[in-house]
Image 1: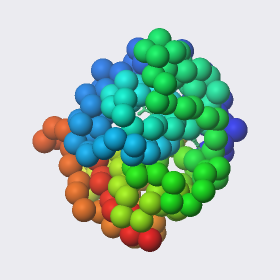
Image 2: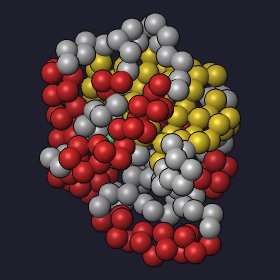
Image 3: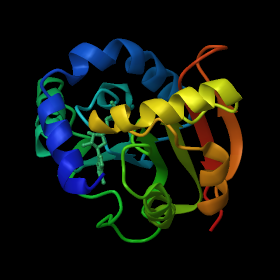
Image 4: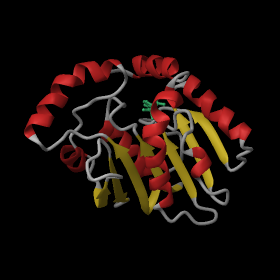
Length: 205
Ligand SMILES: C[S@@+](CC[C@H](N)C(=O)[O-])C[C@H]1O[C@@H](n2cnc3c(N)ncnc32)[C@H](O)[C@@H]1O
């Protein structure tokens, strides 16, 4: 999938996104943001911030930047920023594979349900690492291909269909970890059996 198609898909989904996905994603967003130690003046980058479901969860004492490829998703995020008067949050239209920030800018770089959407996840992680400070934290929450053979086959079969709605079902975490040289120090899921994993990696540059 190319950025132009992804943009179209999410521009269209922006109107129904919260209605469909909030109930699944928001408890996981809350878990992730509550489990990291964001301190006053820390800088956080939310990559592929979408409609901004995560935004009300960030403490007011930190500085948050949210970027997304889709202008329509960002409009929904901006509505939340305005509604809750979240002056510590800035939103920008930007491609995650070409982040327009200086090296070593952020303490936390977070990508929730994004890494299986982008055409080149390794490039996006390289960009996340570049803009994150050394020893900062990279957090990736996503669906990854199951290690169970049968489930893995089902996900491969489903992949052409999930691609049509904007994400790959067959992204393999082990492969990604190797290719992107991710130094993972913790992996977890919200529930014992869950479709999504949360990966915490130290920025090892
Ligand atoms: C499944 S949504 C996840 C949104 C949000 N992170 C969440 O957890 O609800 C995927 C988002 O990634 C964005 N996206 C896809 N490719 C991108 C890219 N190359 N750069 C920035 N954002 C991108 C889409 O526009 C969409 O808003």
